[in-house]
Length: 121
Image 1: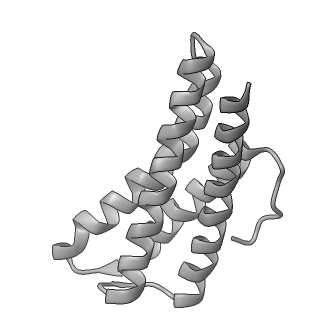
Image 2: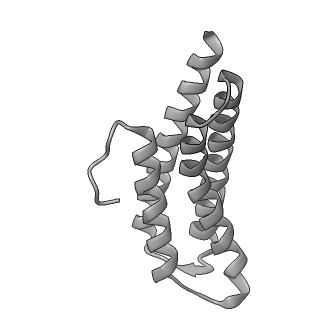
Image 3: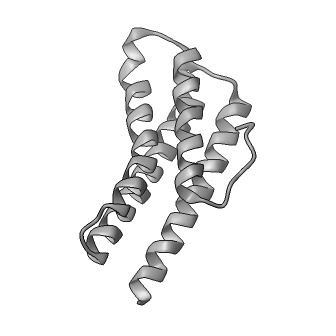
């Protein structure tokens, strides 16, 4: 990810989603592996979407639930990125995948820490 990191988790997740969309749109892969690319796209974009949706939550519990879903999506995204990295079924520069894994790991840690702090209240 070439863009400067922001402290706003929603913006950071949005930039991550954009990076995944661009990655998938420029990647070369056999149609047989379309479902892997599709799953990666769905889970990665779900992170930011759930963080934004949390703001519209009707209660603190609702807010916390959307953050929990975002965390699950971030963890799923790690799985798909690792699978692509380790099987090489989609032609993508390993350094790009490495950078995306670092970013989604950081995002997931931030989201997890927010959830922990919400649970303390």
